[in-house]
Picture 1 (cartoon, helix red, strand yellow):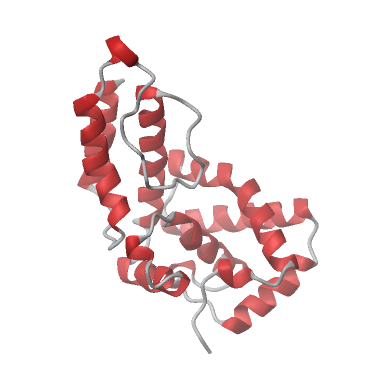
Picture 2 (spheres, one colour):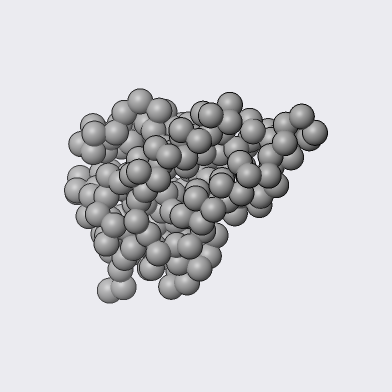
Amino acid sequence: MLAEIRRTQKHILSRLFPTPNVFWRETIKDGIDGFLRLYRPRFDAREIHITADYPVLAGRPRLYGAEFILQYLQCISSENRLLNAFDPAAVDRLLSRASRSYAETPVNLAEPVLLTALALTILGRSPMSLDLSGADLRALRGLFLSMTPDGLRRRLSWALMSFAGKAGISGTPLQYALFSITRLSDSVASAAREDVLGALFPCRME
């Protein structure tokens, strides 16, 4: 398992998505290096020794020790593949709209990117632009409010499959994103009811 952790870390770092967010690289490189240096399975196999500051889209694994680290890295690997489908400058613009301090904040990078790509797909636009307007959000809110919870999940799943086909995303990263759809659709439904979609879908000022 430790060998698999090293292989997964090396694979991610060889194709690491470039971002100014300090928690992204520091967790993957320095954090995992620290775990591998300190981990002693014979004495306390449940310890992880690191804080694992980067919050993954699927949620913190409910595991311990090397099992936790391996699943955590596998989540990051899928998110890294999703992020690499986009222009880093477009991702930076999007995340800067969400928070000007995102580079120094432990936030998940993939969620707003994925949701924005799905929204643009639903609107019949290129998901790669990551560019939503206030008018787009108003149109999306009306659409989302008209849907049942199951209907919204199906629409987001359809959008994900359509986007994934265009972006060449398949296998584990696609399954990882599909796994997250139920939680994401619940968040979207709640944000639409409360008229705060901008918190999930960062848009440009009009």
